[in-house]
Amino acid sequence: KAGVTQTPRYLIKTRGQQVTLSCSPISGHRSVSWYQQTPGQGLQFLFEYFSETQRNKGNFPGRFSGRQFSNSRSEMNVSTLELGDSALYLCASRPTSLETQYFGPGTRLLVL
Amino acid sequence: AQKITQTQPGMFVQEKEAVTLDCTYDTSDQSYGLFWYKQPSSGEMIFLIYQGSYDEQNATEGRYSLNFQKARKSANLVISASQLGDSAMYFCAMRQTTDSWGKLQFGAGTQVVVTP
Image 1: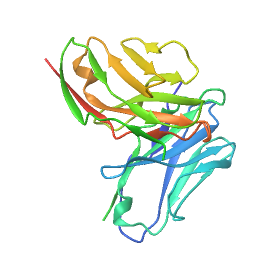
Image 2: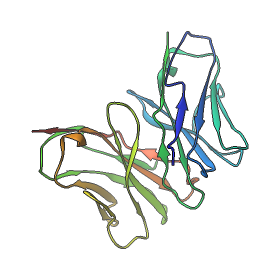
Image 3: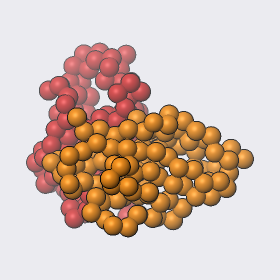
């Protein structure tokens, strides 16, 4: 089975712009979670989607949003980018009956 | 507040030796899950091992084993026979009962460098 894929892998944006990141889960996985990783804050949970519904949300401002499509692919959007949004954004999927999450390679976002 | 603590920011290990990475956690839940992930410099998080709070036996996956001491709230990772490819950042993570299975809380990580 193919693993979790994320696009794009690298992204450079400027402050005030918005960005959309995409995640395709492992085939058959209906749960997709997003995490932000920065040197200062470490790994932080953003949100989880299951069957197109947001199940859980981390402590992030409303500028961070996401959605999931009927094929389980997920996107996250960050509006009005700030310098502090520069991070590695990781997506993970898991099968319905298990709690182990499998991560994608991540998208490295640099905000200038 | 519930949290994961990894007290070793970094360590050097000689090839073929065993290494233990420490992880303690804090939760009031009775049911929870504990995980270890490896993150090479490329950035991808690689799942290593899982331990459920009700599992009576310590989990093992090849060269990885999890030393689970529930009363002490510790879940240390043991890597046997270290290889050069084991050089990476290692994260301990926890899923709590009150949270969705899709939400993990991570420790700060331990950087492991394996030397020849």
